[in-house]
Image (cartoon, rainbow, N blue to C red):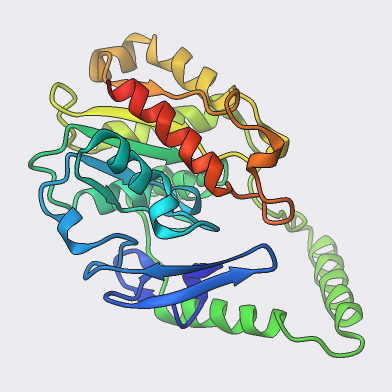
Length: 289
């Protein structure tokens, strides 16, 4: 995960982690190797894009451009197609709450369009934000350092490692059962009506002028989940007076499931290849027109 690669990222007290400002690193796995160059704010973009951008792009690893070169990611492609100054303010593993918290720190004086990339795993962060009186608690640097240490340890192998891991996990789960505690869960289950509602509730929290700024949303998906379940759930809610009175016609969800083919995804990693970024950027640009 790029957010815990020491050469690329660092702890951030406001957002937990960020790319190291004014830094270039290489992020790679068996399917790709790409340079990540961060500007003075630690965004994968240049400093000129920070000044009066017309389009601001928020999201996680999909929008950030995990697995593609900087000029191949959706924001750079969108800027090239539209000619509008576009800022890539996305960061790997951010949920909707942190994305919009970051939006508050940006120059939004000239923003015409806000593009938000949603991902199903945003639901954990969004649940924490809404369940804590609409405040997101940022974990400590010690927590971040521990995450880094675990990541480095996971990359090492020694004979019997997986047996040790499995034994420790089984012992932990057995102890939980004896104490009457629920078993460990990996991730939070996806429930699109609930998750779409959380997304819109968080979007309502932030001081956006929906008369002036239009919001385009698309979902970062993998090859096994090419569907419009999230899109359909959001569109259903937008017809509800509780949301239509607030957003009007300012929020539009883009269908990416129908334009992406299996070959547009990395086989092992699951993220978008460069061709997928180009297709998504073209779909967004069409809506902007």
